[in-house]
Image (tube, rainbow, N blue to C red; front, side):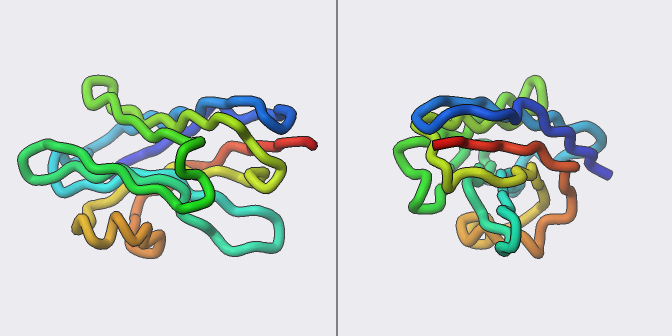
Length: 131
């Protein structure tokens, strides 16, 4: 079973940057595997932020929700089994609890940020952006 531990949240002013990291331990698949970041603001549903899919030959593809395109970058270090989210130009509306999640999905499911299909979740890390 995969265990995920997030780190790197905090409080910043609008326009600032934060970097979230997610360390995976336990058994992880090397191909056809989706890892990503989701967030949930108070009173709102879980929202997919950014996913990274590792295909059958090991290549990766990234997917982002429109509201973070150009500001957030997801990356993966397979050697360290970590996934990171670099968040730049943060806005107050980015304030939320951020969760790392992973699972064996198809590329289409990963692109759709199908949270309900991911079976490993971290405990979450809070990001607060003040105006």
